[in-house]
Length: 227
Ligand code: 97T
Image (cartoon, rainbow, N blue to C red):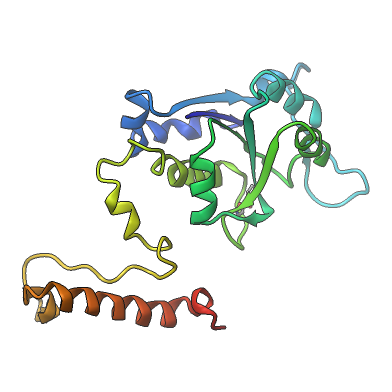
């Protein structure tokens, strides 16, 4: 998979080298390239933003640098991902869909967003996904893009050593994960649930399932048709 990132903060993405995806990058499974949007702004101050038509607070990212940058990066089989608080929810299902793409291009907007014509222009030509991490506001798309790249990258075949471990995770079954324990069996007066020491695999599986259902109902009733 090829991943391109366009941002005014390219140095932000240095952490991708030290994360789990570092090995995937070295082995060539994921090829990540970061581009500085300001290199596509040609005025003396390398301006990438301007005040909004119609008035209002904040600044909007100008379309010309985005067009120049993206024209040199996208091809007909690219998917353009635009992190945005106004986007559709990014979920594990979204991550799975994107993990099957050949080429992802992340457009990281700052300020109050990118001139909408940029999104509309590319949406007429290629797949464009405006995606939100959740109902809160960040200063820009960089942190959201990083979260999405990690969620997608670990689903690319070969990136995770034991792919079976992916199946048991929160959000794959529609339920949250069961609680986990390791040695010692007694810690600060707290015992590991005895069923986990019983050696009875059926009883363990049943207990874990019950824990998943209890936890999901308590913490995330929305996942099972409540609230
Ligand atoms: O708040 C944002 C600002 C810019 C780009 C993305 C976001 C965001 O993404 N998920 C939640 C908020």
